[in-house]
Length: 149
Image 1 (cartoon, one colour):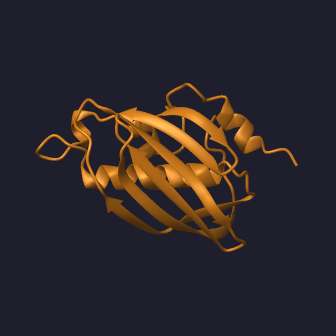
Image 2: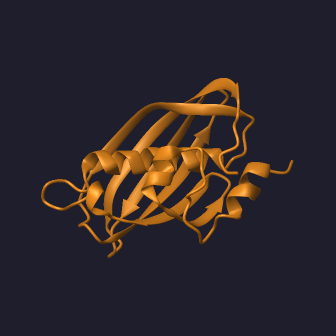
C-alpha cells in the first residue's frame, strides 16, 4: 500500500514547512530534515518571540514543538483517520538560547487502533537532550486531512 501522505511530506525535506494546515507548525518555521514512516527529524532557530525573560527557549514553546513533531511523526504513517493529542508529558533537562538552532526528533513507539504512543527529543547545538516528551494520540475516527498543499 502506497503512503501518499509520506510521499507528499518527502517533497518538503530540506525545506522550511511554511505551507501546512497547522498554523502553529508554520509559525515555528521548522525545516524538515528527514522523514520516514513513524520517524521525523526537523531543525529550527530559536527566535526572540520563542524565549522566556532570560532569553532561553520558553517551556511552552518547547511543548508546542514536541506536540507538533509527535503529530508529524504519526501523520507520516499515512493512516486513514485523524488522531489527536490526549496528553503530553515533558522533561525539561536544559535549555537553548535565542539564536541557537535546535533539532527535534519525533518517533511513533506504538500504533494502535484507538491509541498511539509517540515521543520527541529536542537537542541543542552540542547534541545534548534538552527536552524529552511522550504523548498519546487518540483516533477520532474522522477522515485524515491533507497537511500540505
